[in-house]
Structures are given as C-alpha cells and as structure tokens.
Length: 376
Ligand code: UD1
Ligand code: UDP
Image: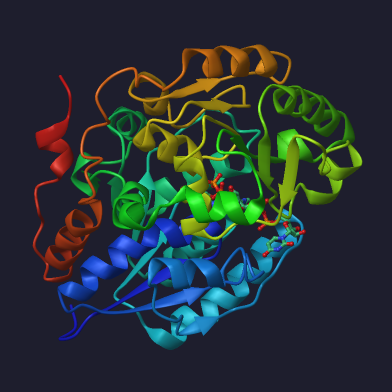
C-alpha cells in the first residue's frame, strides 16, 4: 500500500449521504486522506445540498452531474464518469453505500480497473429481483472486497451467495449513527409551526417504483393514504419521483393533508420524531422509526430490513390494508418495539468501519467482527 493511501467515497442519492457521514467523520478522525465523489444522481438542493449541510459532509472533490434517466442511460453515464475520475484520482480504496445505481456503477468500474472496494450496508436482501435495488445489492456484494453489514441475518445471506466470511464485518448501522448525532437537534415544534399542522399528526413518504410508477398503483396507494388522512392530519414530503403521478391520482393539499417539498434531514427527522405514525416505502425510514420508537407502516410486499419488524416498530401492509392498520396503530398509541434494538445499532458503526479500513490499508487482516458476533 502507498505511504499516504487515498480513500474515495462514491455518493449519489439522498440515503447515501446519511450513511456516509459517520464513516467520513471517523476516517477523518484517524487522519485518513479521503475525498467524496458526488455522482449527481440526486441534484436538487433539497435532495442533495441540504444533506451536506445538515450532516457536516465536506464538499465533494468532484461532481459528475449525471442526473436522471432510464436505468441504462443513468448507469451508462455513471460508468463513463466514474471510470474517468477513478483513473484520475488513483484511490487505494473506494467506499460505496447502499443499493442505488451510483453504488452499482462504482463497484463495476472499480472491479474492471482493479481498484479495491468496500460496501457499506452489505447483505440486505428482499429476495425480490423486481426491485432495481435488489439487483444492485447482489452485484455489489459479489464484487466488493470488504463488506460492512448492518444486521446479523445478512451474514447467512452472504455466506449462501459464496462470499468468504473473511471479507465480511458486522459493524452496526451508520444510518443510525447519523440519527444518534442528530438527536439533540431534533425538535418537532418549529417544523410543526412552519407547516401549520396540529400537534398530533402522521407523516408519509412514498417513492418506490412499484408504488408510484403506474397510474393504477398510484391510484390504489393514494386512495389508501387519503383514508389515513381522514383519521389523522397527514404530512407528505414528496419525493420528486412520485410527484406528478401521485398528484394526478389525487394526492394534493386538502383539509387534513399537506403535500410539501422533500424536507432536509434534520427537519424530516424532527417531524418523524414528533409524529404518531409513519407510512412509508423507504428503506432508511423503516430503520429510523425503529430507533425512534415511532409506529411505521411500510407499504410493500417485502422488506430487506426484517429486523425492523422483529426488533422494531415496522409492519408491512398492502394499500388495501393500510387504513385499518393505521387505525390500529393510532389506537395502540406509543409503539412498543417488538424486542431490543438491533445488535450494534449504538451509534458506533462509523468508528468500527474506520478501524477495519485503516487496518486493511496497512495490510492487516483484522478478524471479521462477524465471526465474533455471528448468532448461534
Ligand atoms: C433512487 C434509488 C432508490 C432510493 C432513492 C432514494 C436507484 C435505482 N434508485 O431512486 O433506491 O431509494 O434514490 O431517494 O438508484 N429527480 C429529481 N431531482 C433529483 C433527483 C431525481 O427531480 O434531485 C427525479 C427525476 O425525475 C428522476 C426521478 O426523480 O427521473 C428518479 O430519480 P432516480 O435517481 O433515477 O431514482 P429515485 O427514484 O430517486
Ligand atoms: N429523508 C429526508 N427528507 C425527506 C424524506 C426522507 O431527509 O423528505 C431522509 C430519511 O430520514 C432517511 C433518508 O432520507 O435518512 C432515506 O432516503 P429515501 O427514503 O429517499 O431512500 P431509501 O432509504 O428508500 O433508499
């Protein structure tokens, strides 16, 4: 390894920023030379800049500005842009996060260039190859050199796919690290006042292609969400992906529903913290509600995060069952998490990842944490 090795983080979409912040901070504290490559997959200020500010992320060393497009067009632009910048920067390790197209493109580029890689949030599986993210997860984990796992069930999934245990480290959840760091700043009151909503309210976020990409799915979902809004005032910070389709299906401001632009990280989590119920199809929000003890109804047929059901406040629902499930969750009051918080969701995932990376950069082969932590 070189004298002063360089670590590059490839980030592109909203959840990437949240997961990377604790890792970047922890590596910085260990004096590691590093830089962020922003692919520009998300580019609106409310989908990108606000996260750099709220999470204290340093400015990227490059922004590839790839923008939006079909999977093929976006991934192709990502491949071309990333190949150039990785060749130019000559990193010793590239760290990728989560399951978005920027993650997939970065792992492919590095594999072909012979650049070593680490995947943060490895081993999550919905076992639903109809989800673009599932394809990205499987390919990324097949190619990564270091795999950082947030949840114990991922260990057996990766083992079943033939990933050697020596590459895999159960480190906890960096998205929860970010939440721990933000906790003292999370105050629902100013957001509630700005949005002019009552003190008791629910929040919904919806952006999965299966829910918002066809008029039929959007209509079924919106009808169910409007039913929830008849039970409790509902705020919907709307992801740009679903904006037009959901509006066409009837998701517009009404007496008991407020459809607003995406919120910044601190504002959004403040709102979630003060809410009586969250309805979502987000991956990250399932984890954050588990940590905050807020009831969460996930409008999906499956989840790659089952630990949020077994150890948290999450339930899967169909659109048809959503109104009744909301009624029950609201009647039950404060959520009682099903068990203890998931193992190692303690705000220390970033430092654990940084420790493994720095040892790896020195050529030490740290015993994978997964060996010590694997459940019997
Ligand atoms: C992407 C991820 C998804 C993740 C989500 C997080 C993939 C395949 N999907 O989905 O896993 O849950 O990010 O939010 O990578 N758009 C804007 N402004 C922006 C960004 C996007 O208007 O700043 C609009 C564009 O119309 C675009 C659409 O949103 O076509 C979808 O964006 P894209 O990045 O392709 O996928 P997401 O649905 O955001
Ligand atoms: N989030 C946010 N503002 C919003 C909606 C979500 O800051 O209006 C945050 C949320 O707290 C979580 C992350 O964005 O940290 C999740 O991103 P998203 O739901 O877009 O992606 P997913 O997790 O589904 O991949």
